[in-house]
Length: 271
Ligand code: SF4
Image (cartoon, rainbow, N blue to C red; front, side):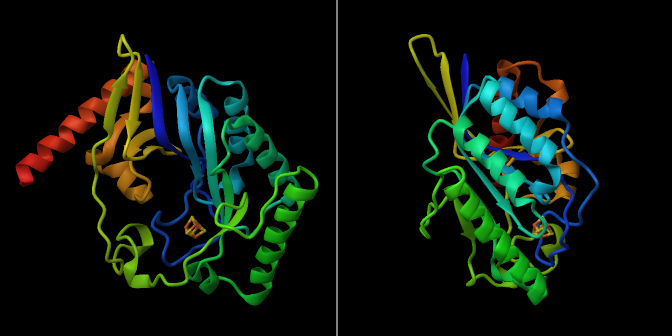
């Protein structure tokens, strides 16, 4: 059986060098993902359309980013595109550019592959002018290094390889009620089912779509990417499995099926 996942998210670290008021993850933690968890996840899956790398601040876990790159090059899963947002505050531009070049060449499509800087209005509140200027310089330097040194260009468009994650129209009240925004956010999120499509004469190709498979840095596999660390660690309703309890793609698919059945039963109960 080939297991294909539309959207996989790997939380590489819970460390962060900012303390944003709006952060849906909640206070930072001194935790980084185990390399074996990355390896195991990317061996259980045959293909991923979009691999999102998240945190915390993912660039504070460069070793884990390199592990993902190694798995993308040599591991089983074919990755079409990757996506990562950095706050850009303290990046080493040449190290990040070298890693990004490796990831770009490890991915098979790259139409949507991007590294974005979180220049939205929330992050601006958290920084003084000097820090803002440093982030802007890091952004420009990364863009320039990617194009001039590695030939990967960004043209001020929506799908730039080095881009900006920004929406100045957002406001504090429109935030998700998770993490630090739990008391003033307004948007509630809830677990949802994966759509499982099966193709092939012998049902050998399985596609899981519609929601996000999220591997947390402490090994929990949950549905969705907008939960706080506290919810991931404590709310069993969103939990699909712990990676240590799975041995194969069959185990992972079975865990997703059991999760779907649980969510459907809950929805029926509520109807
Ligand atoms: S929003 Fe991002 S940069 Fe800000 S505290 Fe949370 S993880 Fe760190």
